[in-house]
Image (cartoon, rainbow, N blue to C red; front, side):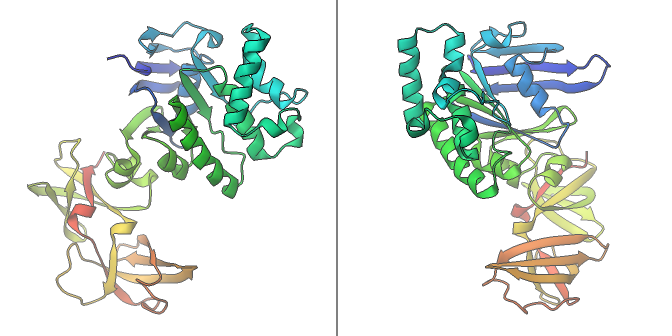
Length: 361
């Protein structure tokens, strides 16, 4: 099968011997929206720059539509890259900025103008085509950068935190436009971000990276609800982790001996479980009840540390017997103000199928 993009055991080691990317493997289908997500220094931008040709590949192979790209310079690759600062030319109009890549390629003016007109219309930029970028809003400049990247009709569009400079409301609006545009055009997008909400909202699959390695590649819902590693469990969402020893399996349910007693959760399907494990419980799965209620599954005693209501959401902070804090959120109709007093003893519980048991390391 020929993929739009394929990275085979790709690695990057800097001249001083520091590894930046280690044994990176990924196959991307045509029209997929892939997000690279991870903390600063995890290797996500370095990987993006290797795909673009701005960083050399130390080991492995990078293929686009079955053709090896390792040694091709950026201008000869069927990719286009959008940077966080947009890199627009301040002395050029919007029209000239958008058409610059076609001009460099030597495309005849009539053909170039026709392509520019089409992409300006697609992104709603016709009315500002003769303005300079410094007279435009952040959202307009972001659209110009998108237009310039798409007008050359790349097989793959690479985006390096392109929404990072926008305020929260504008970022949300542009997210919606970006996803719709990508699906309409059918272009493969590779998107680097450190914002979980962006990756979860936009992508078809998310590549979570840590210290140069891939931790997990999954669709957003699976990544959020079924982490494969302790790093992903702690990095994505708001999970509470209970370390323990595997006692046995009851069909798909793993029984774990923890410091809070026996607990149950879904056995992770991607790894063989034995010995030391972690039971991962999402904040959304945890129920809080008054102490003394019987018949609860995975019951853990705790005390209420805080109870705040912000708008229509109740925020509860509970403290476990080992001193750890668990943060819970729910609609105010579920946990009304005054439902639990501060320092009141409570019980936290969850259904086994809502939790995931993963290897400890």
